[in-house]
Amino acid sequence: MLDHIIIGQYVPGHSKVHRLDPRAKLICLMLFMVFLFVSRHPLSIGVALLIAVLAFGLANVPLTFYLRGMRFIAIIIIFTFLLHLFMTKEGPVLFTTPIVTIYLGGVLEGVLVGVRLLLLVIMASLLTLTTTPVDLTDGMESLMLPLKKVGMPTHELAFMISIALRFIPTLLEEAMKIIKAQMARGANFTQGSIWKRVKAFVPVLVPLFVQSLNRAEDLAIAMESRGYEGGEGRTKFRILYWKRMDTIALVILTLYSMTAIFTRFLM
Image (cartoon, rainbow, N blue to C red; front, side):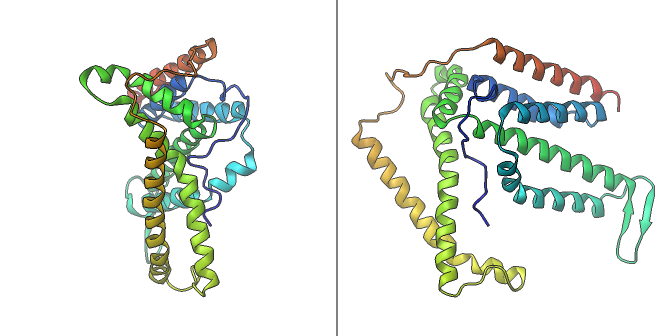
């Protein structure tokens, strides 16, 4: 049930996306996320879809692995589509039933929001799937370096974000172990009403929360025993180098941003 969550996982590889500088990937992702919601024009959405397909193809991530991880995201996207389908009452009426009336505006709005969510998840997942936690931490710290001049602990902040992403698969794995242990004792998570299924997960959350605290304490003790004192005076074993491919990726996302801004005034 939770064994194919792809958020926070890393797939080793030597693809073009893997070799991109983490700073370039972070900047491109931020540009993509912001300007994906700037324009509703079909041209802007089509360019975003093309960029997502191109990035996925260059990343060489196994398609079967990715599709299994998208199952829960698909449920959210379908729910969002149905919500707009039933709640948006704009445009001509497509058909009417005794329960609900479907409008063309609801269908278009549901498709638009669903496609945006899908593209957003694909690009955000590619960041963690193609970037090691160490590179991700170094990239975030480098981008936040100007904030260090105003007293913000950039190294500690980037380290916390990286650790949080890294422990998502670990927590999901522990949740699966607890669920299997509860099922061996007679717990049922697949039958009954939605309320009963939610209540069945309560015995899972309590030990998972306790294990999370224990793991955090173990990690803190291990870091202290190794002399970790934050980012002050630390040197880098891996040096980040900005390459031509990083510039090309940034130019592509910049052109997409300009397209989104331009097409916003065409609607």
